[in-house]
Length: 184
Image (cartoon, rainbow, N blue to C red; front, side):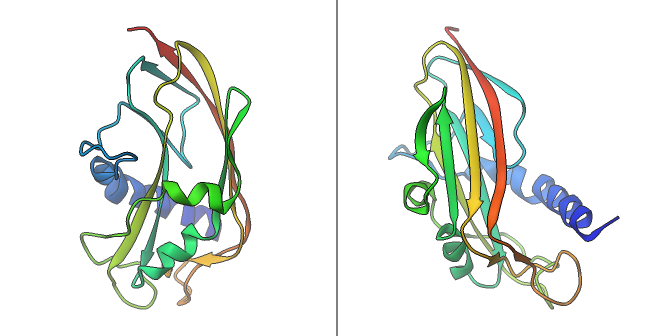
């Protein structure tokens, strides 16, 4: 198994153990106190299709977690951009400036993470949430391209080489999904 496969496997395991249960605390994208959603399109692991009812809360979302230094979350936010299209219409232009307002507050993880570089450490993260609620009845094509505009680190050591992992600038995800909105 190569290093990239190992990182991917570890990421999926951590996602299942740490992130999925924490989705109940995803910050709301409006002034509402209730952060509940009915449909979640999760970058970078989307399904091919989703179904929602008129009036459902529909989010496309992602997140970033780091070790030791909450400022690294902000550093990532300042490097991550989303181009988002709904039915071919550009909703977010793929710039950091357009993407950044949809980040929630930086939060502290619940337990030290053993994969932090050189020693267990506190984790910090933030959720990125864009609200797609309000789409009309029908089939909608949701397309997105996420890009890192510069190299970033999360201070994890997934490949266990004793060094913080670094992620190069470039396209991270280029995907799409179908969202069917029904009257009931």
